[in-house]
Length: 117
Image 1 (cartoon, one colour):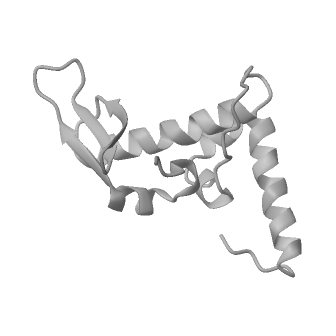
Image 2 (cartoon, rainbow, N blue to C red):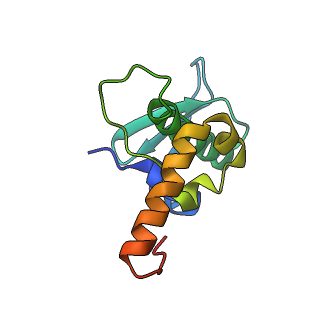
Image 3 (cartoon, helix red, strand yellow):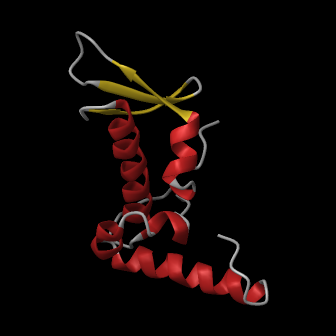
């Protein structure tokens, strides 16, 4: 089962992901979690490839939750903590980013003001 990458901070994702360098292939890196291929990257280093894929997962989650996409599949939103890692995506997908903020407020009020992220 594929982990919910967009809800993991990059530091956590980086620990469980492997970037495999590719040869005689159109791309430089294949990023996997266990046996699951997450995506491909043309980054210069393995760590940059992981960052590239992590950001793409957050981007896709926001895209599918921003209201513009015609998506029949529910895609979990990133956590507020993860969204803070990519302020450019916050600006690119304001509707979905607002949903993340509302979820944070909701959970904060349910926890008596304690934010668990």
